[in-house]
Length: 116
Length: 113
Image 1 (tube, one colour):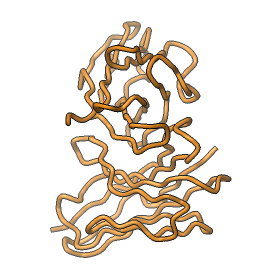
Image 2: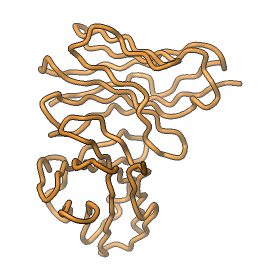
Image 3: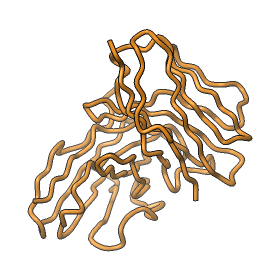
Image 4: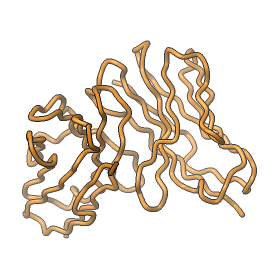
């Protein structure tokens, strides 16, 4: 079974600064997907960014980018120019590429606080 | 294009009652997943369904919980004889194909008194 670990229960960053959230995972598969989801106080789960394991290039979405280190099984999220609206719980998630069986495996989350 | 819809958003049940949670996937999506989120935890996979088929229910408790996704209508997660430990947020997600990106609904918060 796969596991996802987020070692930072809480992170705090000044508005406009850059912050990096850590995620490590464990799997015996060679092909899979990794995701970062954001959960604001509304509790809606919002997809932030997605990475295919077979792609060496790190995914980017505007101010959000990842550092994907396949050999180290590490998948960190970098948020540049932090904004107040970025304050939320952030969850790292893993999905086998062979299909949706097992669903997404989530980490326990990192609570991101943005200081004005 | 409407997103994933869940209802009710909040549900209060007394111990021993039944809870029915509904999920309508995004238009064109035929794959539905149910997850449970306990306080201060990440989401935990429960069950994966396609139309009229349960594909994987490895995350669902063996007793009192059942799920269906009929040919017509929403997917239903049913919890019989609820207990206090069932209090949680239940999320549904849908995707257009097996292994595709999952889009989440707003969740149903179940409180058992």
